[in-house]
Length: 187
Image (cartoon, rainbow, N blue to C red):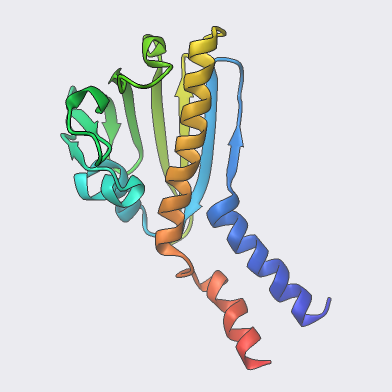
């Protein structure tokens, strides 16, 4: 295989690892989004479990109280009221491995706000080498009714954007991704 083709394949593989990841559906009651971030697990964990991390992921101001029963509040900057605040409750966590949350208050403008009962999200963090982390976000408890399916679609899109934002922050810091750039510059 020509060197250029190898570099192209390697570059595409890196981009796929970081931005393309996978959004899949396990069954009708769940929604799965997963991807890779070129950062050590402790950094990626911090993105999802600190106020500063949430700001990096979505840009919205957040207050994170990481403890059982603690709340994660995110509000769009343009909102002056608490009615647009998304409030999640921390159900469980295993540091740098898993975080389980559930929405207890949806933004008032969300078309799906009445469908939150019985749903929750589990986020898994798995080291994939020294400087890469696999993140798997699993939304559970969705129903067949239109509001629940609207909520599922909202979170599929939001979770994808969140993982893409995390990946972009660390692009292209992995050795595998930097190698094609170095080789291309030398040619």
